[in-house]
Image (cartoon, rainbow, N blue to C red; front, side):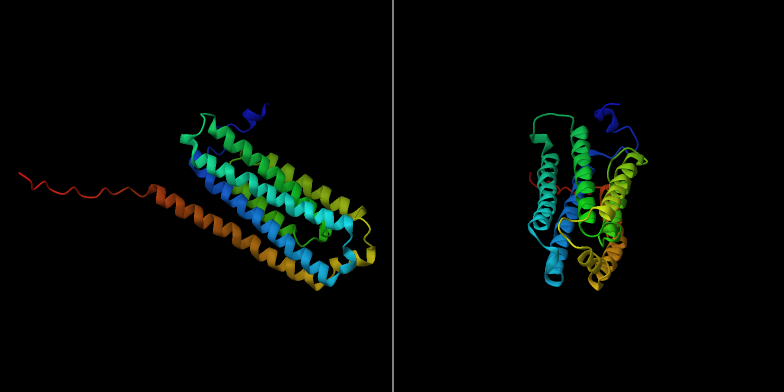
Length: 231
């Protein structure tokens, strides 16, 4: 099966092209949250567990943040191109939007699972954040219904991140430091916040989507014409 057939609009959720800017905006916000939350967590770890940081862990943390930034840098111009498609070079815009969506979804899975491996694997506080994004992508983004390929991708990436972290953690970090991070109160508070966000963000996206749908269904009222009083 070719990629174009895999992403064909007729397979599953036939979301209209006008909806994609909203879907891309969700991924942009996810990228911003991933970058911001990662940076905050890295700062907390630097202050509480300074032994965690060396040239390798610093390079990995920088690469993760840069990856989220690259995800945003791809999503923003894609959204603008779809907005301005009537002025752009003619192309298959449905395939264009879905292929870019697939790239962003894969990027997020790789980045977030790298972050999960880097922050403790199965005990990472970012696991609820990962599940939240999977829920958003499954319910909102136009991937083949009912999302078996998406489940396989996100499930396999998470399993690999957890199993690799159990055997191979961040380089040059002692087991004592890793254990202190995994069982620290900072991790518990971060996980608690992400669990709340994992419930609140999908609700907010559903609310926004329903408001947008109601606006589209609202009939456009034309202003009354003024009577011609000139003779």
